[in-house]
Length: 415
Image (cartoon, rainbow, N blue to C red; front, side):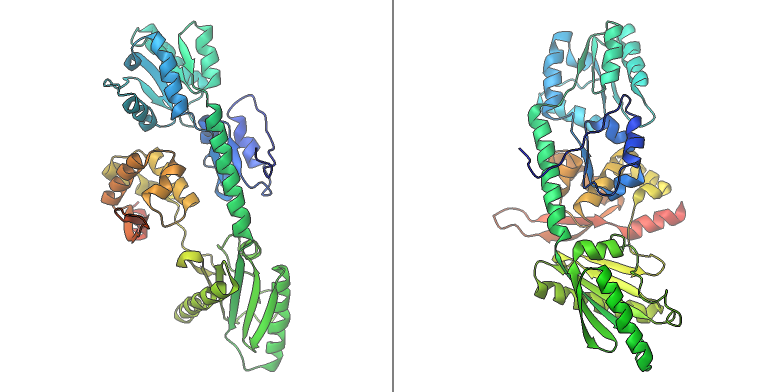
């Protein structure tokens, strides 16, 4: 069904083993697909998860609806205890079934809660006769409850759900391949032009640099060079656009040479070259103002990354590292920090600017629920509207959101 996918399975006995498995994966893997939300949650905060695209086979949606349908034989659905990654997913399922009474007992799963904790939660409620049974997404919890003769339904993904997850993996990998081979054009502008000997050194070292990119270069002037390569090659040399490439600071006598680099990425050479000139203009403006080397990258759609400098100050926001900010935003918005972390992960996948319709699939929630989440984050100041997307067909233009950097920074400072 997916001939281009080379699937490599990893087996484990405990969900906690996924932490070691993921940590030891090489960067040669293009995607990590977890067999469910629990092993995914165990590995969520690993450094490797930031480098390799990842997701899990969802246990909500049609899979949860099937489990609720099966659980009707146990009794009233609002008297069944459930464990889930997110409470909203369960409440959404009850709304889909038009069940007026919401479940009273739902426990959210997070890394500190293992299968034994879940089993005790369901068992205690059942023994107190507060519930008539349980629905769980944990295989281990299900086995424990069965041993105690507690009525229980195990949520299992439908074949169609597994197929959809693999389709997402396949599409992501194809996009990564296409992105990696996008044309990239770079312009290097040097700040010293007086010494002829240094000019020779410039070209020699730039030749070495471009060789690392498996590219070609044109000497436009003694202090300006145009080079051609692919997105994947320039990403490798800049650690995914987070650090400056090495040019001169390994060469004796050239430590004080100032340079600016503009990189353009596009579907054609002309588009990439135009973007490179725009990026160079920004890089030179920054270098002149702050007296430091810099790199700017202009992607397709005019998205810009930069400044990337010798001290790695490329603008990149990760709310998970600003606990005080997360807590304050959670308090104002009424959303849990877990939901905020899910939004952060989704933004990392979809891009810094996004519409509700674009981010909803990454959050694995309905567009309606995503609108509610974005509205709360906008009201709390965590998101801001930067534009509107014009639709080809008739309809209301979709708002384009981005993280409010000023809001995050100010909160971080108070924390």
